[in-house]
Image (tube, rainbow, N blue to C red):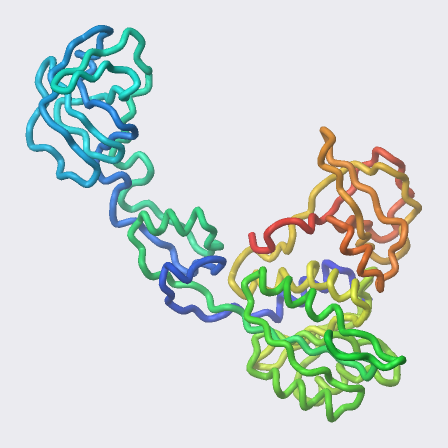
Length: 401
């Protein structure tokens, strides 16, 4: 067995970055920017009013001052070609350009508006209510790649007038459940069969991470069925098999993949849950064989598959960031494998507290459902007492960073 860190290192070593493609800005949500992008313009492109009010000279902004209205500037108007004189004001609206001679905006709440004149109130807001040209960003401002295209970044790129973006292609992932004992959800299982539950959990992880996911038919426990289904997945960037990766007489996936030209990089990890995991690749596709126990497959999806998806799009392959919390209950010493315990983190206290569930069997999806974290125990970790600090992975956040 190899360590989790060594397995991840080897897995990333056989992961290839994806090609790029141009897309419309309207299709950018969740994609990964593949090219540094420069702004061709300042934002705002001119000095503008941030409120409805009256553009005036600061020299005229005295309590009780009477000013003559000489014009009106709505949003979208041309920049006025006149210059504001003494004791003059211009009615102005949010987003409108500031006329020459004005260097502040007095908001409507701070004046007595008499139509052709205004009288300034005794107390004026200190804020000048002017957005200076380039105060958000200037021409040449750079958004560096790679970067996940979040709503905020997409809005920024729109303001930079970028209608088309170069992004990495979506990873195409095929998921193959294996085993004679499986039926898909909605089918009626025989007395000796179970529902392939982890398939859809993995699919959701991958789709949130920006993948295009294909669910392939169940591969039965014979070499012919496994090879036929693997052939259906050969155009994928990543192939995930579930089950059939252990040492039983019917665990044939690894041997079949090897005969089909996949070079196996490693097998078995000092990890709990998730020991019987293997990985390999052929010239086109990366193959990861996940364990069949439902929780094992999902945990391995978080720990190993998310970093692979990030690496395919040249993001930092950290998976979900590791954080620190304080134990609220003691723990016994850990065994020789790195343990990912299903746990609850309480954020209501000044320092987050974490507690592992009592039952940690890798078949218990209900326990995983009631968890918001995976507590990480290092191999051979000493007994821990309440108050000790431990690492955890939060399960309630975006997968791409």
